Length: 254
Image 1: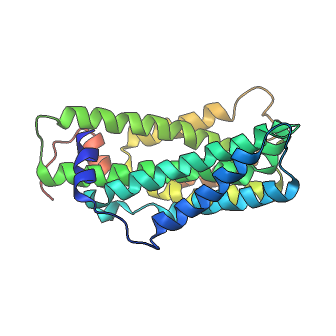
Image 2 (image 1 turned 60 degrees about the vertical axis):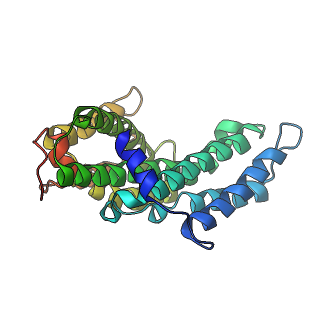
């Protein structure tokens, strides 16, 4: 998207010791673990535990620049978010090298969920940057294309939110402690998401949660209190920059 390109042009190189460099170190260590792992060299419990911690470090939503940082922080945001996705890929590579990948994924579930949580934070904060930029500069020849790209970001974000709802509420698949950790990490991010979406898109997110939690076999296995908290986080009265432009209001200077 053109706004992403604009952000890349504005952002400068990251200084040594920056959060991006610290994240990159964790990712490199995790990648090295995944490179060494294979069905003939299955990672040990100690290795998996270390990989889990490295992935959690690399997917901390606090690493993602806030939307208020503006388009000048877009390049950093894209790099941080790309690293987070890569950390998730390395985690799956580790799991696939074990005798029972599905069981291993359950052991790594909190870290796997954190990948999704960071991804949602990335989308929400990048949408905020784009929304402010559109409001600042007003409508232009590429506004429709940018809005279409933003809509695609929202659609992907809603899918991940529904998956997080499953991870935070399914009592028959995840331990209470893992579900509690995922819920605690997801709630503040969903509270960021809500004001950035117009009411119809917030409702789409709620509908996606409803569909995800109505899948066969889920009845009686859903933590209703956790579900209520997730849904409450998405019900928000404010309408910030991305909400305004996604609601197809004509961009005007603030």
